[in-house]
Image (cartoon, rainbow, N blue to C red):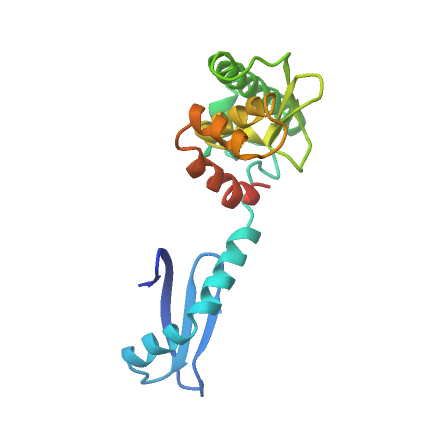
Length: 216
């Protein structure tokens, strides 16, 4: 079943307990359990949920922000999965080679991911540099605080984790960084530049703010 609060939909199920003396909510990042005394009517359950809507909204949002998604496997071995452009795929799909030990396979896969990211970044820079501003180069960053940024000497940096995001999100981050070459702050003029290049940038920005934080 699903409980609707405005645009928010929370999957839930009801558990009747003969020992329960009062209604109780048990919320996880994926589902809500409504634990009630045996014989509780559906109307009573819905009324109870309605009285807890504010709490549900706050806690659901908090759990979604905290829940992480593992983009790399703990062990690089046959059958392990990895996130590439927002989708979980088998490691062998990325690296088509002979059977390798875990450490060597890890090195090969990470190198392949980096190369794929570099190719995609170059593609977007080539396209948008003509519309916005050409950088003096780019590099892949490990700075956890930023998905992308521009340096004082006119280069742009893109975080290595962008390889795990959908390509449309990488496109937004590249555009965002290029626009900073013209406007250093997040002023109204800056966001106008971004919107000129990507009219739907707000949708991509929201993805970064919600889903991006979960990548680990």
